[in-house]
Amino acid sequence: MRCRECGYQSVRWLGRCPGCGEWHTFEEESPGPTGPPSVEPPRPITEVAAVGEPRVAIGIAEMDRVLGGGLVPGSVVLLGGDPGIGKSTLLLQAAFRIARSGWRVLFASGEESALQVRLRAERLGTLHPELYLVAETDIERLESHITEVSPRLVVVDSIQTVFYAGLAAVPGSLGQVRECTLRLTRLAKRTGIPVLLVGHVTKEGLLAGPRTLEHMVDTVLYLEGDRHHNYRVLRGVKNRFGSTNEIGVFEMEAGGLTEVENPSRLFLSNRDAPVAGSVAVSCMEGTRPLLVEIQALVGASGFGTPRRLTTGVDHNRVILMTAVLEKQVGMILSNQDVYVNAVGGVKIGEPAADLGIALAMASSFRNRPVPPDTVAIGEVGLTGELRPVPAVEKRLKEAAKLGFARAVLPEAAKNGAVETGMELYTAGSLKEILEIFFAR
Image 1 (tube, rainbow, N blue to C red):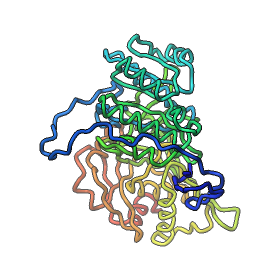
Image 2 (cartoon, one colour):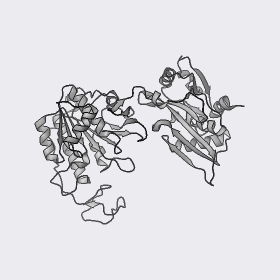
Image 3 (cartoon, rainbow, N blue to C red):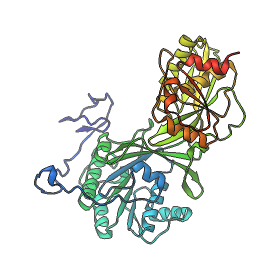
Image 4 (cartoon, helix red, strand yellow):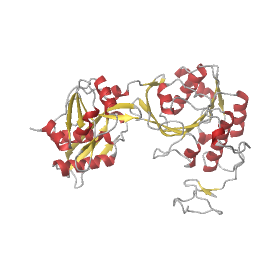
């Protein structure tokens, strides 16, 4: 018996799992095949051929960037995301791009019929004779289809619907997901065919099913976004063949997902008039500088305990900036509600946004706007000092390209600045920066 939530094993059925404490989560599972895919003998690592097949470029630049340059032959990629976010749309467009380049693709749908996929393909303009469709959930029949079609790429939508008849468990259970993923992984490694899997997510936004699912695949991608906005962000959280710091930005339109070549313009729209509480920050997503608008609203609390709410920024960093502003700068925020938002729903995690968050909060608190053509770059320490951040040159060049005329930097980062024609404000502490902008 095994717990479907945490994987805890037991020789008998238990009502409550000792591992995670959940009730009625134990399932019986039959042992799957454990033999190796080949009997290749061990050999010195120096004798292993260092040159393999080139990556398969999908043709969608934003997706290729996140994957590290394209699909590695024999790799298994897992794509997760909320329902309706566009996972099937993105993979159908990717399958079409590869089919259009002359390589055969097999799209296996376990949630929709072949007719439903055909109708979506007509709407997206992704019809091609080299794109094969099959509505199949049995893993053994799916393997035979792959052998028969001999595709260059396999797409499975979704892994939670695929099952192995040899297991007495329902599709989507721990044993079924693990067994089917293992078989597809073995097939990919043996044949060199890359496999793209769609995975469901839980209420918390994590991939549903056993945690080992993420360990079994080579790459894990998440398609993120707010359903009230048209843009989508493709983010890599695991990649054995490339960086996990890159993101791809798409916009959902009637014809599917389109690439956004300059996402900074998308996140900085409607910033012409000066408004208190609005500051632009420059963040690095992999090798790409991304400019995002931070908005803060600070107002008197109507309750005994003030509220601290954040969207798109690290909640703990906002709490730290609130404490620094109160302790080191002298702003009384203990009786103020603080709301901080990254406009557009984008998620910011790096400390380089600290200075922008603090400036936005101070601007809202004092009701004095920061000039809209100003970008803030820097990390703020607990003593109020400003710390430099990497890639200042790239950040400033991107800001200058978008028309920003001023930049706020830590004093230590001044040497990394380049001649961009921008006016630079540098200081060693947050208090000095606030005096520059808000001194009366």
